[in-house]
Image 1 (cartoon, rainbow, N blue to C red):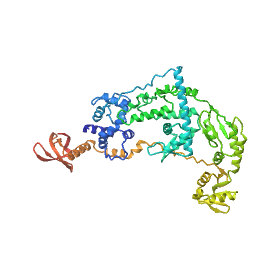
Image 2: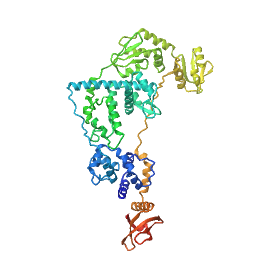
Image 3: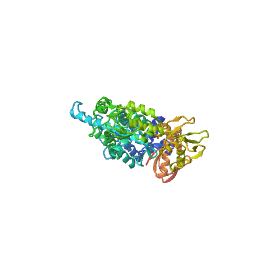
Amino acid sequence: MAASESRTLANLLATRDDASLATLLSARGVSPRASWSDAFDAAEDLLDNSSIARALADLTADEVDALVAAGPDGAVPAGDARDELIVRALADDAGRPWRVVAEMVATGGGAGTATSASAPASEPLDDPRAEATGAAEAERAFAAVGSVADILHAALAAPLARIGAGTLGATDRRRLIETGAVTDASAAEDLVAIAERAGLLAPEDRSFLVTEAGLTWLGSSTLVRWSDVAQRLLAALPRGVQGGVRGGGGWRPVADWPRAYPFDATWPLRATSLAALLRRWALVDAAGAPAPWMRAAAVGGTVDLDILAGLLPPEVDRVYLQNDLTAIAPGSLAPHLDMRLRTMARRESRAQASTYRFTAETLADALTAGETASSLREFLLALSLTGLPQPLAYEIERTASRHGTLRVGPDSSGRTRVSSSDDALLRTIAVDQALRPLGLVADGADLVTRSSPDTAFWMIADARYPVVAVDADGGRRALDRHRLASSPAPAADPVAIYADLIARLRAADQGDADAAWLGRELEQSVRARATLIVTVRLPDGSERDFTIEATGLGGGRLRGLDRTVDVERTLPVSSIVRVRPA
C-alpha cells in the first residue's frame, strides 16, 4: 500500500459526513469497536490486504468488471458501479481504484463476466407448451402455499426446533412429513427458509416461531398469500442478481447467478440454494425461466396475478358435514374458514378436497379457546352444505355440557383459584401427579395455587380436564396459547451504531492534518529504523535534504544517523517539510 494513497484516503474520510461515513463502515463490515484513533488508522485498515479481500467478496460481477476495465491507472466510468466502489472506499472520489485494489483484482484469477439484466425470452402465452408449463407451475404455487400454511399451523401448535446451523431440526422435519405438510425433507427445508425470508417465521432462541405477520398471512386468500411471499422474496434478492439498472426491479437470468459475486467462494452454493427457493415458490420453472405470470416482473415490470388466478383451483366456502364426524371440503377451502375449522377439527388429508375430523378432544380444545356450543353450531351450519348431522350435534352438546366444570381464575388475595360444583373432580385434580407442580391446596370448597391463572389453566387443560378460564368477576375469558415471535427490533441506524467510532475520528481531525500525518510517518520510520530523505526548512527559508536512519522521536525532535557524514543528527520536527524513503 502506497503511503500517499493511505494519506489521500484519510483526507477523503475526513470530508465525509456522518451518514456517508457510517454507510462506508457498514458496507465494509467494520466493527463499531474498532480501535482506530484517527482517520489515518481508518485509511490504513481499509487499504489493508485482508480488508480489501473481504470487500472484493461483496462486489458484484458488474463492479468487478468495472475495476478490471479501469486497470491500475484508469478510472471507472460514471455509473452505478463507480458509485458503489466510491461508497465502499475501493476507489477515490474520481473513480480511480486504489493500487492495492487494482493489484488484487488483477491477480484474483478472473473477475467474471458482466451479465445482462434481461430475462430469457419468454414463450408466447398461446403456445401449448407455455400453457402446460403455466399449469404445472400454478400447481406448484398452490402446493407451496398450502404447505407453508400447514407449517405455520404446526409451529403455532408447537414451535419448530432450530438447530445450531439455523435450519429445521430433524424431529420436526419428520413431523411435517408424517402429517403431510410437506412431501420430503428438501421441501421442508426450502419452505421453512421461504417462510423465514418472508417474515412469516422468525428464529428465537432454538426455535422457529410464527410472527404477527405470519398469523395475518394465514387468514389471507391463496392468491394474496402467494403474492405476499413472492414480493418479499424478490425484495430480498442480493443486489448481484437483481436487474442491471439499480432500482429498476427484475432479476438477471438464473443461469448467470453463480457468477454474480466473482470473489466470493461461498456464493455459488448460496446462489443454487436461492434459485431453488424461487423454483419452489413457482417464480421460475425448473429451467430457471420466469413462470408465465412473472415474465414482465423479471424485466422490471409487475407480476401478472390474473394469469396465476386463472390457473389456481377456485376456493370454496362450504363443506359437507358427514355422520361419521368428518367434514369434506369439495375444493380449496377459503383460508379464513380453514383456519377456524382447524380450531375445532383435525385435518386428516390435504388436497384440493380436504378432510377434517371432529373428536371430543378437538371440540373441547375449541371450547377451551373461547368457542361455545352455540358459536360452534352457528359456524358449522353456515359452513355446511348438508346441515348439522345429529351425531355431530350430539357430540357438541355432550362436550359442552361437561366443559367448564372446572373454573380457573384469580382471587382477591392474588392467588389462582380452581373451583367446581363437582367435589369429586376437585379431589381428583388435587392428587393428580401431572398437576403436582401447581402445588394445589384446599381452601374451603376450592383449590388454590400460587401459579398464575394462565399457567394453571393450561396445565389443567393439557391434562384433559373440562376447564374454562374466568376473570376476577367470574366472567369467562378466552385464552390463546399460541406463542408468537417477538416483534422485530427496528433496524438500527448505521450512524447510531458507529456514533462512538465516528466521534473519535472527528475529534482526532480537529488538529493539523499535515502535522499529524508527518508525525505518523516519522513514528513508523523510527519503529522500522528506516532510512529517510528528510527535507528541512532552514532559518533563512531555504530547504535542505538530509539522508538519515531514523532512530528516535521525542520532545518534538527526530534523531537519526546521517549516512552521508556518519554523524548523529537531531532535527526539529516543526522544521521538517516532508519525508520520503531513501
